[in-house]
Length: 212
Image (cartoon, rainbow, N blue to C red; front, side, top):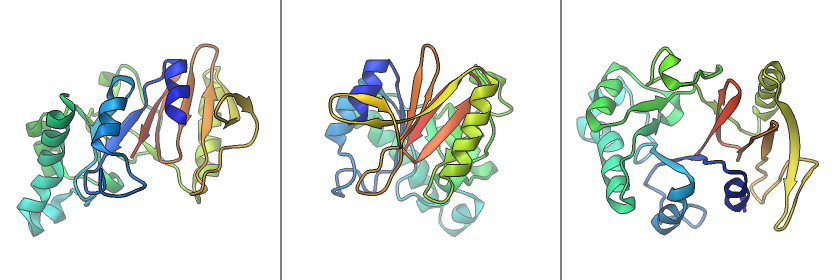
């Protein structure tokens, strides 16, 4: 339901995919879904089994470590005819060895869970492989919303809660799905940014949306 709304507003969300569930779980997207969405979304890697891709995993098993980085890009590039450049670290964890192999695999930038505003263009950030991202959960969404609101007002953006239906949108209470997820919108004069209760990266004057 969200994609038609995003497309209408000219917004391209970021979808970070971990492959263990794709086309294997009823609640997950399929590769057919991703192929249909790729024109209106930026698709990135998020590991294979969503393991903690840090020095500890590398020490335990090189094979498991490499699978989390290299195989997702290979599969996404092949199945979707793309050149995947973005990555979101599972749990926001990474080490120097992670950065080394992300670069070797061909990823150009990556998101941690460091909570701070993002600068545009991306090259203005301290590291292209440690871009900020917020994980919105049932326990953290109030704090995240207040943070989003504070940063938005500081940059002349109006924050609103919306409810989406099949045929319309209106300012109201947040969306609640069967999984009790909430959707918030950051509304400016020219752009609307939606985050489906998973990961959101705050950007000065803009919002980059990221979902699993």
